[in-house]
Image (cartoon, rainbow, N blue to C red; front, side, top):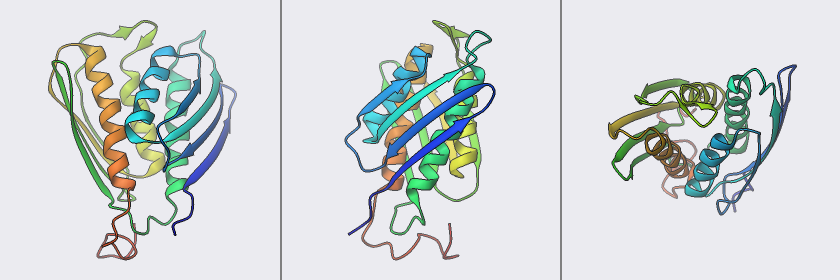
Length: 197
């Protein structure tokens, strides 16, 4: 029987304070307090569609803007994924989602390769949604990729509503990661000819 894949991460800087707990084998429950409502909405969707249980308590220098908090949340979530994954024994490694959200269609593909790379082709027509600057989606994804050490491609196939596009990206990321971290009984050790990921 596989051990429980969980992680608890704390990050404290002069700009942000974050506590995050993650269970990879959950039911999609999320408790989120960040002070950035749009990001909470996206992370709730990510958690639900990836079946990850996640608790986040975060604060930061929001009177400046939400950049530091969003980026640091990406870092902490990526670190939690890497820790919870452990040695990656038996996992599928790859995951992909082609996710529709009304007129929007977004492709998300991930490889738990141990090599960080972000391919981000997600044109966003609206500069902000509420008080959330949409350019921070890329910053969040890049921070996540750098800490979890995975290859991630996010590409817009169709769409013109910025909210729908971003929502499809976060749902797609959840689904792609759920596939990548799932177990395959045919995988002996790690899925690599090198014997290491």
